[in-house]
Length: 137
Image (tube, rainbow, N blue to C red; front, side):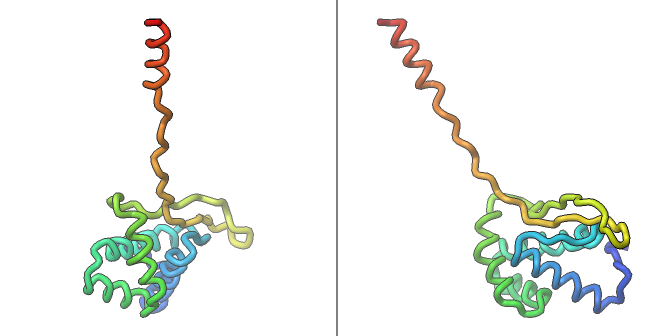
């Protein structure tokens, strides 16, 4: 199979995945079981890809999956697409937390990747030129 069934029937699984996807989009981080995090990652990446396309059909597909939650869809199409415009996938990361106390199921944190701005190094050439100037004097 191409997906995990997560021990639920089709309607419940689809609703659960849509809800978890909305929570990741709105809060940018959730704590859930490892298998759910791996499955939700696909849908979050798909929603951001829809946002990067930006056309009407993509917006309607995102609205249909997220149960007509316009706040979440607007966040995807306005904020997240600007954040990930130079990234070609891999918008989420999964961090392993440990076992849940009650049933020892593996827990993970699913969060959106934080884009780090490139650090500008101080100009080393300026130091070298000052040394050369001192040698010439």
